[in-house]
Length: 253
Image 1: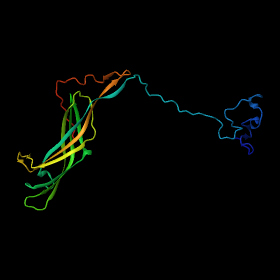
Image 2: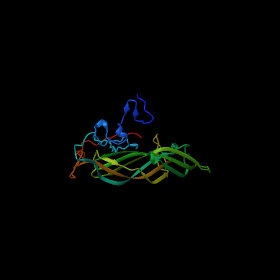
Image 3: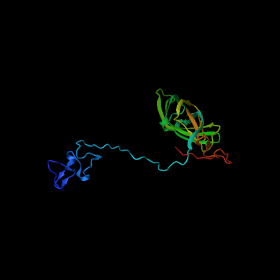
């Protein structure tokens, strides 16, 4: 490469990148005697960083596959209903740690449900929504054994089953259910409830625990809407009656 002189950074031993007229006034000899056309960038005369006015635009994005229909798929609301669910179970004294002494006086029963750990399974029958699930609880019992004066404490960590079937006219299999988190309405405990043990012996050394929950179930259905507002079902046979009853084994928690 040639060495640039100190006088002119654009002047090399082999010549100038710009003609003499470019450094002063006059015509550019390289483009003819009457070449006075303006250059797009004044790289020779201009001392600005850039004299070009460039407008850069990102290339237009295109869909990977063009749409071939003006119809849209939406969820149509079949109905919405507020419901209650009841979780309950009866536990014998022998289920607690330590074991509650038979014929003890039950002073207090505290039930702490874990709503974040609820397991729910929902299925839709014709005109009916079925809910089955479990709610984890910690049960703490304060009791006084027979002949004792100081109370003792026993605990049990377990889950209470709940189930509810709600009449829902218009609901059909293959519809979808939207259900927000459960809210707690009430907790009840009753000692002395009869309990049948594994040997078939009936005892009243047991405690019934009941929890009332509330939620809202909303049934939706996928439909197609055309540009004129016409609606048709994605599955027009979803509500046909089957000859055999539905049998469904739900997953374990």
